[in-house]
Structures are given as structure tokens and as C-alpha cells.
Length: 182
Image 1: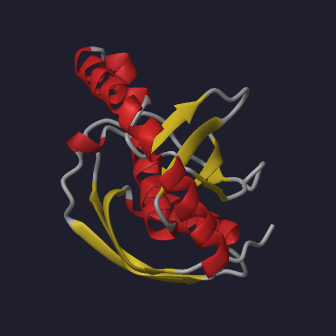
Image 2: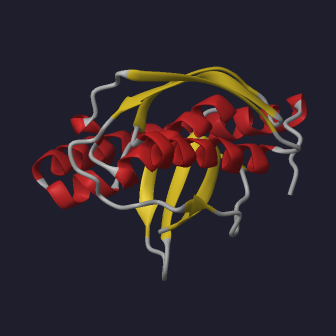
């Protein structure tokens, strides 16, 4: 389950990104078109975002999340969690929490990070929507989360799971699918 993010692996990811640069440019117009349709189509707008998307799951809720590096991936996962819980536009960030977390590997750290945000939501009724992650390595996260009470709760998230959780390098950087118990 543990992953080492060595310079060689990051070099492979960089080469893949360079190789796929032309296809990303070609797909740019379709993304713009998709962005415009999300503005006019509420259903599409609420299920497909720049750094995460909700994907079908039989009994629970799942998100596919991506980022250029671990820091961006973890922030995207937290934004996706906030979106699952409530409409982030209704949250006024009035509470700030400093977090310093450790784990034996990146997947466990991701579960610990999201689990902490879920716990704080249950304890304080706060949905965290802004994240300043100062340091994210495969075994350590240090940063600040800001949030507040949501105008409307979409769903109660009970827990984050390890179900099929694996952080993988892709042409976008890093990607994972996260399953939440509801």
C-alpha cells in the first residue's frame, strides 16, 4: 500500500505530462465547452469539478481526485469532501484549525487527513472549504483548514475508507479514488 515518490518516478510523470501536452491542448476547447455547460446545467456543475468528480458507487459515495502533487491532491480531496457534505458557496470560513498529521504512507495519511476533517465536522458542525497546506509528504501533513457552518447539508459523511484506495501517477500528476461511508 505504501508508495515512495522518488525523483525517478516524478521524472516519469513529468515525461508523461510533456508527451501528453499536445493532447491536453487539443482537449482544452472541449474543457471550455464543458465548463460553459456546467454553468448552465446545474446537475453537471455539481458533479464534475476541476480537481475532483463524484463517481457512481453501489452503496457509498466515491470521488475521483487529482492534483499535480501530493499537496494539490490532498487539497482537492478535502474540497471534494466539503462539496459532498454541503454547498461550499454557503460556508463562511470563520473557524481555523491547524493540523499536523503523520502516517506510515500516503494513502493512510490521506485517510487520516479526511478522517480528521470529518471528525471536526461531526464535533463542531464545521465544513472546511479552504486549505493552506504548508507541507505534504507521503508520511506527514502540516497545514491549516478554514471553514464554517453550511447553509444546507447535502449528506452526512460517516467515514472515509481504504476501499481500493491507491494514489497513482497519471498524466495529470497524481490521482486516486476515495470511497466514503454515508
